Length: 424
Ligand code: SF4
Image 1 (cartoon, rainbow, N blue to C red):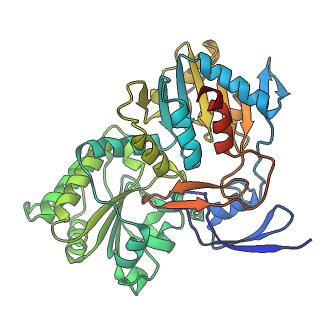
Image 2 (image 1 turned 180 degrees about the vertical axis):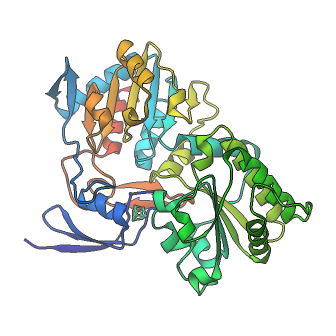
Image 3 (image 1 turned 60 degrees about the vertical axis):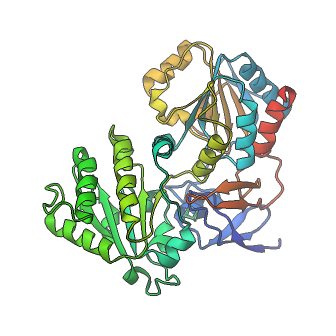
């Protein structure tokens, strides 16, 4: 058996989309991975994300659930069954989306352009907050390469990249040496502001603030940074308040990362707006940028695709940030695309799905709680391993993840194409 070594592979483990991964392949299996974090390595090696010694169960069949019994289907049968459900749907509810290729997303958006559809991305709260922000302001974007080369001030607001994008700090935002940050972390002031103490305290200055005072803290920092308020915010220790502002004043290139933390509470969107307003004023003294920190590898790609396909102007469509806001109703069809919807639904929502006989269709690479419940399951290949496709990194840069082998499993792009072919 001959081993093959590949380099510069793209990892679709999170929205960092690292493109420097090395892998050794043997007999259509990855047996060794280089440069990846533990999550990325687990994805390439077919292991569980949080228990790297346990294999992750792949979804390998096309099947229907018939009176609690699983019945294996041919590909065409499974696709035709999904098509039939979608054709009769009064409303399609699509969940997931952040782990699909750009090609598949385009097929899905085009296929459902004339159907009443609720779009619920798995990174929904973050994406919806940014959509709300873009309606009023357009904060400047930068690339992660520019962050590495230039940023001498990084701030993580309600964000913990160690839990969402593990290599962000080592590859771009904190430790690496860049063109104008030659001493790496020594050349960067790094701050985290959060309502809880996280592991970020080990690598950045961490300022814990009360949940109800997040927006007031942004405003206090904003005012003070413009020299408009002499008083410190009572919610932030005076020493931290002064040091953060001092670092900000000294800096020549600033990047703010906004995470999902504030969005677990009602005021998250207001915090993001306050940050963007502050950044606009900061931009007068030095380049200042705001980047979202989603978890799924193509969440930003979904957002680009949704906006460029008239997602906000289509009267039949609705972008739903929080899956808990979906009220199941008769005539709904739930389409879970590469996301474990049932993991996040409330008991009431699950009961309503059963009571109203809402068909559940799942396109999935893994066995999940959703595939266990779904009426029809279609197995799809994993992007960057079984299937190729484009994705968009968290900073808006497009990357192509090439497949490593030829598999029998269809890509999500192929399944989407077949699904809507008769309608086009
Ligand atoms: S940081 Fe994300 S993209 Fe990079 S290796 Fe880890 S999981 Fe993969």
